[in-house]
Length: 91
Image (cartoon, rainbow, N blue to C red):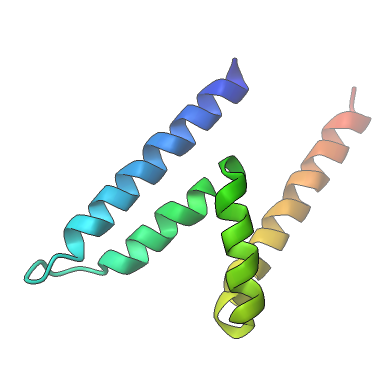
């Protein structure tokens, strides 16, 4: 049940960010619209195989642009693995 709620929250947050980013990218409305759309898409990466394939393709084509994003994802993955190991040993 917790996994379902996590996925649901991720989808709701990502779609809200994408809609907000699209509204902010309308001419005349101030704000970083495309950046917010990109953040919304990145939130959805774990949920969508299609998005992951596109992300990998873009990452290979523009490595300097995606390096900060990938470095953050690697740090987060390592932190999750460390937490899992520490909770596993305490059982």
